[in-house]
Image: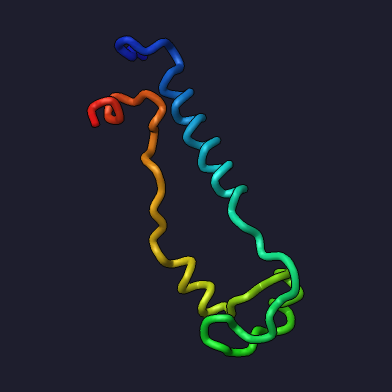
Length: 89
C-alpha cells in the first residue's frame, strides 16, 4: 500500500502502538486490595458475601459500581504517534 512519506508497515505500527498503549493503561488501573467493606461506601447498602470474597478489597455494591463504570472517562488522543491529524493540531 502506498503511504506517501511513510515507510511500509507504518500504519500497522501505529495500530500496534495504540493497542499496546491501551493495554498498559488497563493494566495500570488500580485493583482493590485490603479488607472488603460490609456496606457500600456510597449508598450504605450491604455488600453480598460472595462479592466480598470474589473481589478482595471491594468498596462498592454492584449497583454503585455499575453506575461508576458507566461514567465517561477522559483519555488522551488516539494515534498520537505521528499521524497526520495529530500534526495538524
